[in-house]
Image (cartoon, rainbow, N blue to C red; front, side):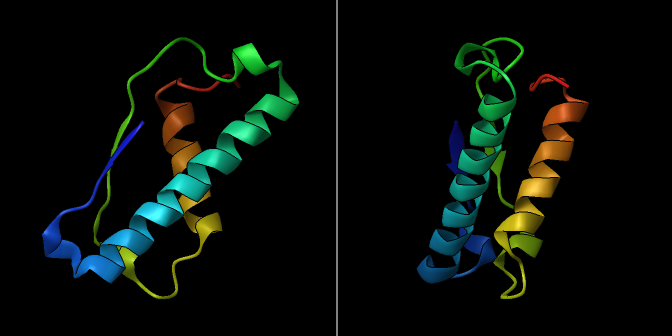
Length: 83
């Protein structure tokens, strides 16, 4: 998985916070999916995932749970994780 955050979103502190939130949400999503299935079947098939952070993530009120729910919705819509 790759994460990219543009300098347009803010300074280094904001960009690093965005990357930390995305990494943690991805970790929770894979752990959650792994607990439901076997370790090998977390994803439907191998994927190269690149996440591009957008403006809403740098808000101080954005929580990891918000990022996790958005990520889970997107992955399910793209059929990256099994239902």
